[in-house]
Every structure is written in structure tokens, then in C-alpha cells.
Image 1 (spheres, each protein chain N blue to C red):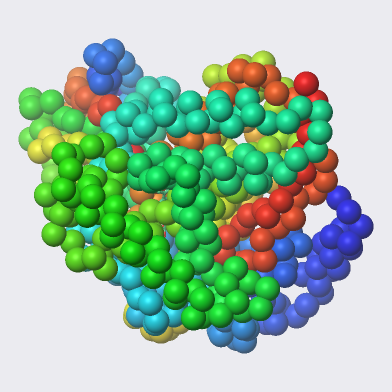
Image 2: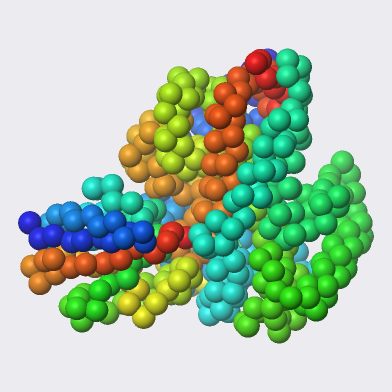
Length: 106
Length: 419
Ligand code: HEM
């Protein structure tokens, strides 16, 4: 299965598997990765699965949707490389992707 | 439970199942005061999850009762408006007098612009700064509680803590802190004999006093170097320092009201729930790490706001029902949080649920509660301190409940600390 690495705010890395088509949020939550809350369960309705995508992967994950753009604008410490990872679906092209989590979800 | 309220619950339960479906009207404040609304929603979730009530003291309204349908309405702000001029966000239409602009009762894009201003103030980074002071104040309150004698948990703990926390957030003069509670109660009240305020004139006068008080604080802070309290942040923030006095007050009152009785009633609701599910408390007592899941679970179980209201601005079909432009639509969070299709054993407080944050108490979508992590932090601190002291708190009687279809809360709950 493809893999994704979440790096916590304090630097701790967690590499977990995600099936193709499964969201990175789901993979994080199912594997108890700290720093990803995913309160709404993947509806793009809460902004608590906020991540920063590493530069190498930014082009590959695709763009934000309109709703995601709005929800992200309310999140804390949003940056140019911010995404809600419930909107990033795993694929072979994303195998090995690295994302960072913020100091807290809000 | 005392006999009167038990009878009320049984009678309401019988009515819930025997009333012809077309006449079923769950938005009855007395039902909520008697804690007797559950059967109404259980029936609606089973038989008519999107239900129309033709006639009520609040006029006609739709009841949305299932988790997924509520999510669909909450995330569709283009069709379901929060605008105050259409009636606002509660089943009782918002009054046109004393209008204060609050983004909870606005739609995008204005809503989004205002929310962005307030949101960073209650973001995790800032909360960490406040945590220490809030904890100290919680410790002082808990250590000052009487032992071995009855007292009112609502007044001595829930109100006092919530008020002190608000005072901390605003760096509000400490000796005047109960004014915050009062203004919050007044702002959300309906004037009438025996109510929080007797007349509309009284209501307006008290809110003017509130406005004056806060304008004084604003002027003090705007002329002083920036600090980390909320008023100073608003006064110095790039996007907020040019707010009109109306906007400033609106945002401030929204933060007070938003954070006041919701948190207060979660503090009472948690203790009440533990008295109903003592084995769950023992589980937590044996493993304090479970607080991470216990806190959101308390907020789900309590559902401090029973509903949010929207007004449809265009026709839409939902679950086979035709909602028309102009219709009042009630998202019953209190029902969605008991939806057995989404939450296992929903009536029970379970301290170690796998997905404790999947609940509707904070809403979802663009209006999702901005203070959600702040509320959780406050509850976490209080329960950490209670657990540290291993207080053995006995609930002596059923609590008295608020008469409201909106705020699900308690006016008193006698308790005793046994150790
Ligand atoms: C357990 C405690 C709390 C509960 C259950 C609660 C619940 C809610 C709900 C249901 C909404 C509307 C969501 C929607 O329409 O989708 C909301 C919005 C809001 N809450 Fe809370 N709240 C709590 C604590 C707080 C605190 C502590 C604050 C103070 C910072 C706060 C400030 C707000 C604000 C400003 C909004 C408006 C957000 C918007 O319209 O964009 N709340 N809250």
C-alpha cells in the first residue's frame, strides 16, 4: 500500500499506509496520528485536518476546492502550502508524500 | 428523580408516540425544561426525519433530526441562510431592535471577513498563553468549595468558573466579573414577567450599560501598549482596529454569549452525566489519559445548544421533502447527537469512544463554533484538577433545567463533596 508521512509540530514523524482512494485524514485518524483531528469525518466542514504539504509534493496533490479555501481561511496559521488532508486522496503518484501538522487544530 | 418531573416525562413520552404525526411539535420549551423531549425526536428520526410543523408559538418550521441531514443543511450556507434580517439563528425570530452586527447571524462574504478577524484570537497558540491563568483560577475555586455539606454546583462552580474564564480572556476588571454573566443572560433573554428582564426597556438599558463599559475598556487598551487579552487584540489588530463601535460590541457580545452558558452547562452536564454513568467515571479515574476523549464526549452528551436555525433562501428538496424559499429550518443538534445510525449507544456517556469529536454540538461548515478548542480546554482543565484532587462529588437531586428550546442547560444542581 502507498505510504504517507506526517511530521508533527515537534518534529516526530509518523509513516502510515493509506489505500488508493482513501483520504490522508482517514489514514491519520485510523492510525492515531497525533495532530490530525478530522472532527467532521471528511466533509470539508471543520478544518481540523490542516496540514502543510512539502514543496516536492505540492504540484501533485492538486488544487484546493472552493469550500476548502473558505474553511482554510478560518484555520490558524494558514500558509501557501496549507491543505485540508481530508481532500487529498491517496494514489500511486502520492506514494511517499510528506506533510507537516500545525501546532494545533482549530 | 422527583415525582413531578418523572410524571411529566412519562406523559410527554406517551404524547410523543400517540399524537398524530402531522401535529407533532417538538419545539416546546416546557418539554425541554422537563427533559421530556427525547421521545419526540426518537419518533421523528424513525418516522419522519424531516418534519414540518404547521403551527407553533414560533410559527411554522421544519425539524431536521438525523445527523447526516443536519450536516447537509449546516454545510449548505448558500441555500440555508443565517441572516439576522431573515430571522437569524434561533427558532424565535431575532428582534429588529438593538441590532448589533454579529457574524454568527451573517452570511458569506461578510461573515467570512469578520470571522477571520476573531478566529486567531482563540486559536491553539493563544490558548496556550491563557491556560496557566485559567488553571490557577480553577484551582482556587475548587479548593474553596465546602466539604461534607450541600451546595449548588451551578452557581459555585459552573457559573463562577465560566465567568472567571471570560474575565481572564478579556482582562475584564475582576471584581465586576459577574456583570459579564448578567449581560450575557440579558442579551439572550426575552423580556417578560419573571424573566431575566421584566421589560424591553430594562433590557435595552442594561445593554447600553454593557456597551458603555466596553467602550471604556476599548479606549483604555487602544491607548496602551498591546497585550494578549482579547480586547487589546481587537483594539490593536490590523483588521480590527478600525471597526465601528457597533461592530466591536457585536463581536464582543457574541464572544461572551457564545462562551458563557454553553461552557457553563457543559461543566454541570459533565458532572450530572457521571452521576448517571458512574462506571464511566471510574474508568476515567483509573486512566486520566481518557480525558482527551471524555471532554468532547461530555459536549456531545450535553449538546449545550439544542438547535441552530436557518432560513431557506431558495426552494430545495431534502430527503424527499420540498423546502420552500422563506421556510424556517431547525437543525436539532440534540437529536442528531442521539442518532443511532451514526453514534453507537448514543444515550450513554462513554468516555473512550473511538471518534469522540464526531458530534454536532459545535455545528459544522462556515459557522462551526470558533470557540470549540477553547471550550474543550476549559473543561479539560477543570476535570484535570478535579481528578488530581480525587474529589468524590455526589449529585443530591435532579438538576433544575432551563426553559428553552435553544439553550440546553441547568439553573441549579445541589451536590456534596464526600471527601
Ligand atoms: C461547549 C461549548 C460550546 C458550544 C456547544 C458551542 C456551540 C456553538 C454552535 C452550535 C455554534 C454555531 C454552529 C453552526 O451554526 O454551525 C457556535 C458558533 C460560535 N461560537 Fe460556540 N460553542 C461553545 C463555546 C464557545 C466559546 C467558548 C466561544 C468563545 C470564544 C464561542 C464562540 C462562538 C462564536 C463566535 C460562534 C460564531 C461562529 C460563526 O458564525 O462563524 N463558542 N458555537
